[in-house]
Each structure stands twice: as C-alpha cells, then as structure tokens.
Length: 351
Ligand code: DNO
Image 1 (cartoon, protein in one colour):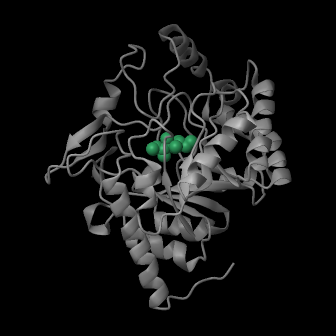
Image 2 (tube, rainbow, N blue to C red):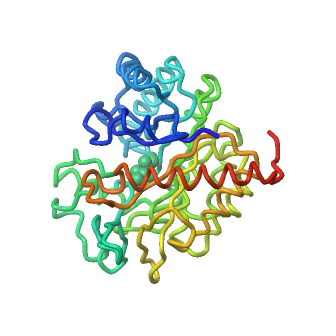
C-alpha cells in the first residue's frame, strides 16, 4: 500500500513541501489542469509535473483524473476522436512512468454538495449534501459552481448539454461506457496502466441526469463489461457510503482484486439523501473506517490510498475539502490502523 495525497499543482495553497512533512505520505495524486477536456496531454507537461513532484522528494503516483469528454458519455459528436485522444494521453502518461489513472463517468457534474462550509458543532467547517437544497439549485442560472465541476461551459453550452441528456437513459450511458472501455482498456493493457473508475458522488441521480456507478450491483456489472485487471475501481468510501445500502467493507472484500485506488473518508448520514462530511475517525461518522481499513489490510491491498476530503479546521482556508490539516490527520488515522493490524499479526492474504 502506498499512502498518497492529492495536490492541485502550483496554485494549490497546500504545497509539496508541506505534504512532504506528513509522516508516511510518499505519493502525490495530481493532474494536468490546463489542457481542455478531450485534448491530448503533451508529454512535456506530464514530465514537468513529475519532475516538480520528485524534486520535492515525493513520487507522482496516480493521475486523478483524465476527464472523459461529454461526447463520449453521450455517445455522439466527436466521440471517436476524443477516445483516440484519451488513448494517446494514456500512452504519454505511461511513457512518463504512470501506472494508475482515475476517471469518472458522471454526466456533466462531478461531485455535488449543497454547501461547502457548513459549520459543525466543534466549530470546524465541512461539505454537506441536502437533497432538498440540491433540488432547489438550478444548474442553468450559471451562478452555481462547485470545485469539481468543469467551469468552461457557457450558459448556452450547458443548456444544450442538459437538453441532450434528456434523451439519454441509464442503459444508453452503460452502452457508451462499454464502447469507451473496449477501446481504452486495450491500450491500458498494452501500456500497463491500471484504470480506476470513480463512483458517482452522491450515488444517485441529480438534476435529472442518469448516474450508473452507485452500488454493488453496478460495480459488478461494470467490471464484467471488460474483464481485465486493467479495468478497475477507485473505491471511494464517502461517495458510495452516502447510500446506506452500500456496506463499504463488504465492497472492499468483494472487489479487492480490482481496486487500484482507494479514497477513504467518513460521512454522517443525517437523513434520507442527506449527509455531512466528517473527520476520518470511525466514531465521528456513520462509516466504520477502522473496519474498512482492516478489509483492505486483510485482502492484501497493495494499491494507492489517499485520504479524501477533510474538514477545514484550525482556521485554515482554501480549496473546500482539500485543506492540509484534516486530511493530514486522516492519513495518520489510516496509517495508525494499518500499523496496528500489522503489529497485531492480523492475517493477510498475500498477493
Ligand atoms: C472529489 C473527487 C472527485 C474525483 C473524480 C474522479 O473530491 O473525489 O472529483 O476526483 O470524480 O474522476
């Protein structure tokens, strides 16, 4: 297992020098942010990123994400060109030594929350999701943006895209995903990059758009679409865990062979389709993080782990969910559990 930490590049207020000082963190999760979605990532930009990370004494471990162009998800327009570009980006990444790439297949909007700075009883701030508030949000007004969303759409562009999705069912989305996988995983196998799809966050449909990667059944279906070790998962405890039907430890035990990248965070489920992000420690939320880490340990997981969103604590300001302090605490909780299982001789399936 390698403990990693997400870094948003030179503009990230959390510097590589600070990340380097977190005990046990050796890998960086990052991306190239200035290439338009769908275009090829040039090798020199990837090499630059890699060198910057390595100069700080860390390694560039995972790319999160190479985004998938909407034409690929809707299955029309220029999808073949964008898939070709995607494959070329994978080749360029492999040339630079990358072996794991995260992506998602959520239509239009990546992770969604109703508030980014909800104050918790201890005075810290966290991201929350409340179904009613989200139902009141209108993605067309243009004043709605979240850190994970592609901000390059014009109002008209967004309107046209949302209209296009009116005629796309979940089954259509599955078919378009399969089309994508058939071309991309072949290349991933060739260049030995483990592809790791991120589940939908939250794991249910929002704004009337279809979402398909949301529970055990859909993960099973996804893995069967292309049965290869290179067609794998980013198992995100907080995304899938927002739905009480998902038992994360069980998912880890079931799919361990195909999990390449793990996002670990806790959430408190506060009502139906309502949750609040919380500190990683098990008794701070609804998920049994200690058991989830045990499931990874026991199944011999040797991929990449990163702490996921953290709260804003100790007066820190910055990118919601991605401050330094609470995520650093998260790494120490996970690594502490890992060491404890190791020292206690908990049996481990050796891969
Ligand atoms: C949220 C992240 C997601 C994730 C993408 C992967 O904080 O986990 O934005 O990076 O969905 O493609």
